[in-house]
Every structure is written in structure tokens, then in C-alpha cells.
Length: 117
Image 1 (tube, one colour):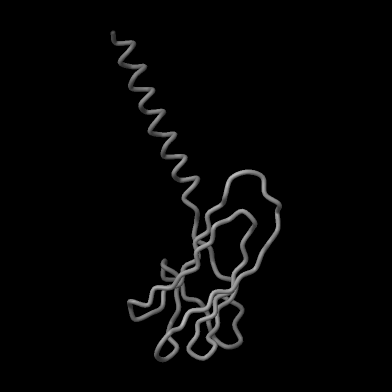
Image 2 (spheres, one colour):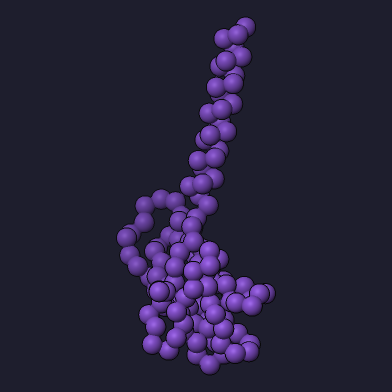
């Protein structure tokens, strides 16, 4: 009887661990933008990504600063190792402001910048 309980507990533990590993592996990650600049009142964020990836550039303008994020989630299967480029443009009303990542790191969006510091 004790043997069946131990096997059951180990099986449940293995299942929970497997589900956790799967969720972490498929969650994606936040990446940095290649460059950041203002074109008048438009924030222009440039980025590089790979084939077979879902990308989500976004901004949050609810606070005093603009918070920019770039979420990347890889697809499944074999994929050629190539780099693709993209650009996201967001209208920012008011004076140019500080742009930062969700972790607080500030992006350099000055006219002569090449991205993050």
C-alpha cells in the first residue's frame, strides 16, 4: 500500500514539474530594442527578430514616463537562422519624455542615439 502512495506522489510531482518547465519554455522573453528616437511626436523603436517568432512591441503611457517593451516568443519546429528587422511607431502626445523598459532601464532616444545605454 505504501509503495502505491509513494509512486502516486512521485507521478504527481513529475507531472507538476513537467507542466512548469513547459510553461517557462513557451512563455517567451522580453528583448531590447535596437534603437529609439523621436520623429516629432512619434516614438520610433527599431528591433531585430528571427523567423518563426511572435513579436509584440508595445508602449505604456499611463505614467509619467513612457514604458516600452518588446516581447518575443519562439515558435516550434526547425527554423532558418536569419535576422529580420522591424520598426514600431507610436504617437506620444506632449513633450518628448523619458522612455524606459519595464525594469526601469532608460532608453537613449536622443537624435544621435543608437539605442539603449
